[in-house]
Length: 425
Image (tube, rainbow, N blue to C red; front, side, top):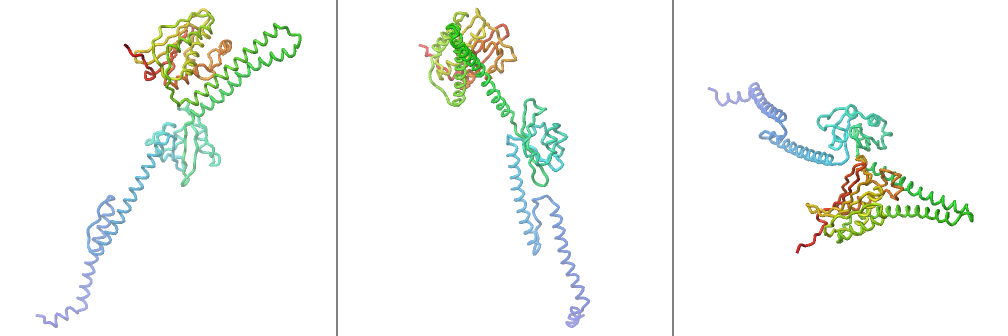
């Protein structure tokens, strides 16, 4: 047996001590290798996987990694939330938005742009927009140098008839581009209407002014040689033209007033029966016995609105019937309360009638089916435009039925909420 000295010799034997040290180091290395393997295994698992449980320095390392992973996960969630909100806001934009790469492939597109260009936000992702949108003007604009694309391109869509877009390309990021598209169809239509309106007003005023100037020059040139009869004739014609200009100016002012006050509600009580009878009297005076004018039985009712505006609308419908019904024809006026409680003022005639291609445009300013006949009868071309605006102000609608050669029926229809019927005793 070894004594105490032998044991001390064994303990302090260099070779044994070295072997013990190596064994201890191997154990420590295996410990670290095991935790490193656990770390690698954890790193390969899905985000959010809890870090392994350990002791000592590895517990500190895993805890630090857990904090870092949690911080990055929260940051990613915040970024994902912000991106989702950004995309949601972009989808809600009325304007079309497309993000393109430097090769003009689609990286993202909102619903408005998809509708404008006929694209699919999921199917067309990553595809070149120049192969999907086959509009030569758009493709050339997209490929043009940046300094040439600063001004928006007005694009008349070949996919959707009547659609006009203002398209602009904006560079951003790393050679990326953002395509903005705005629907300007209504703006272009309004601009066209404005130009047509100015041209029509100028034309309508120029004609009578030319006539008046011609008569005045004739009288001045004739001097004392003009007879009283000729003078009276020329002055009478000049008066007719000046009155025509006055009617045109009055109608333009009325239209302007209606448009300026279109959001103002009018709730004055108007006796519908009395209003219709006054329009009947004016229609008879305008006809001067040339037509058979009949008033159907008038149902009593109070119509909430503006007396002056309603009278203008009703008289315009009746006077149009007189102008476009040949002498000897018949005109029928009526006011009734329909079964659904709505009020209806109708003017029916057996006049020249209107073709179906004209019906939808009758309420446009200065639109005439027969230009020559309208001028002969003294029309300004604004009557039905006034009727439309008056009815819009009273939440009403204009219904038109007509057949060429068979006559027409114009009905002004008012909602039941604007009627007050007499209480039955």
